[in-house]
Length: 100
Ligand code: TYC
Image (cartoon, rainbow, N blue to C red; front, side, top):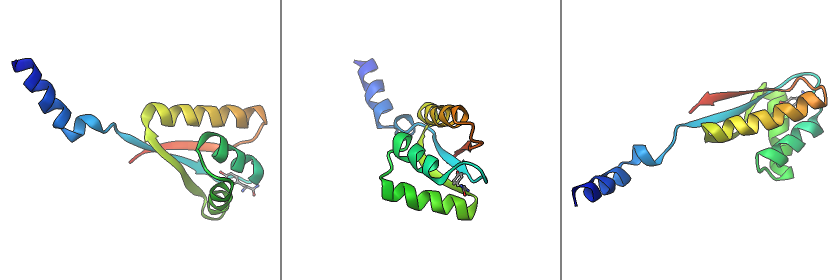
């Protein structure tokens, strides 16, 4: 069937299998506690405590760091969850998305 051939061609096209990916970038600030950032990274970005400790220190020193790279909807959801918790605690944590 002609339609079946089209489906196979579509599945073979790598562009159609890979969604655009976005880096979730945490920015440093002077007020958000280290432990809170570590908690964000372990809770929402699947980091181990050791990975989260190292990344938090890197962000603190360098000004920013990549928490993870995800398709847009997932990146937006993680950003929203993290910012919601930060604002609830009244921390100024800033997070942005950057296309890969
Ligand atoms: N600079 C903060 C402090 O000294 C820690 C911090 C790390 C804040 C990473 C934000 O994205 C951040 N308490």
